[in-house]
Image (tube, rainbow, N blue to C red; front, side, top):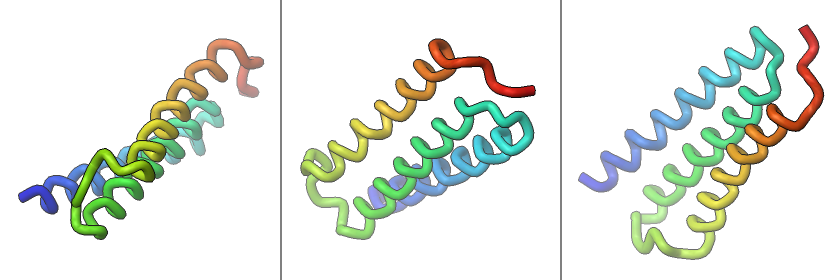
Length: 88
């Protein structure tokens, strides 16, 4: 059951990443690109975790990937609020 859930989370994250890429292509808003990168990283993190047998979720590589995931989201929000406006 855990492998199934990890697969679902990985697939869902990949779909969300593709949606954000689509929104970025339409609007050229950098925030969507940041979010797409974050969710793509999360999809790969969960897929590798499931591929490795879903042993210890508190292992350093998985934690570092999750920290990077949140830092990408925070970076995107900061870029949106502090950066120059996107071209129209």
